[in-house]
Image (cartoon, rainbow, N blue to C red; front, side, top):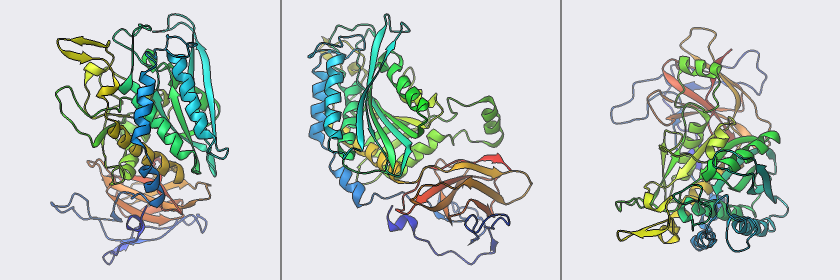
Length: 482
């Protein structure tokens, strides 16, 4: 975001031109730039030599730093403790008791989001999104399931949408026990606290794209609430370009006492859940197992959220989720949207899915006393940095292809130009096929086609959009085409 991210750097005299404009392109759709030839990377330098400049993280600007500075640990703690105080928030618990059960929690969350919406100047709306789930797995009788959803409408690209969720239902050892105390402090009052705190802070700030803040229900019974939310967004034609589930983000302490209070895991799948047979064939032929939209979203999070303003390290895990577990991002992956799951770096399973009890001198149960509220605040900052940067940058480029009609040692890329008013141009990124992160960046300007003197057989390429505010979009990984 700062000048160190965008400024051109001097290059050595070039041997030949690596960018060439298509003869058929219009004046605003092609560019020509000279670059040095690709050379072998030095042993001490993991960034290969070649076209472009070394990739650098997007630094938070003044506006984002101020937003993150205002994340309030005390408010987060109050939210976790209040949700735990409802006794149980089991999906099958009471929906009309004002003091105990999932209905009381639903109404409290709704009231908080309405308070935040009142500060938004009409940009944020809040709804109780309900439906009746007929008997199904872990749902023995017809049950009303209600998500509490706040939508902050974007000003210039309102259909482009980003979603963040935490689930407000809870459970104990027996997933069908709707009576026993199930405080659910870490799983997942912590995630709901992140969602509420970000909704509070962003309600007063206009964004280019739309952000949906949702406390979803029935996650523990089988992702029912998030599946309904995703289905409603799909039916409305929303262009969901990113989704985060915050689930179990309340502590960094493992069962053996290991602590990592400045790290959060981000689970991101490789092979897309919704991949078609044709897409699988393409992926198998050209690679791309590590370049799904969700992996690009995860790379984006690291790019914008690992810095001194969050004081956090984002540990990307190349899996859809942990063994034997799954969260609400899966509902969005099933719709074909980029999605990932935040969760704490070390888990103590004595405080998840457990009856509240003392056993052999050890306290079991998901109680607030085992949460680290300063840690949750840092996780909220990571989410805030990612969501704000996504919503203020241009959208991910569409229609990206890598031309494969001829056998050449050059690479030609094409994409569709976005129509957002804040769009300034595009950058090509590339990396060695064995590298996890994008390594070099080539600024190409406001064009839709570029040819690069670098073989597509040897490296991976991507395209990202750049805004007038110097914010970048996530990378689009090109498919082979003409």
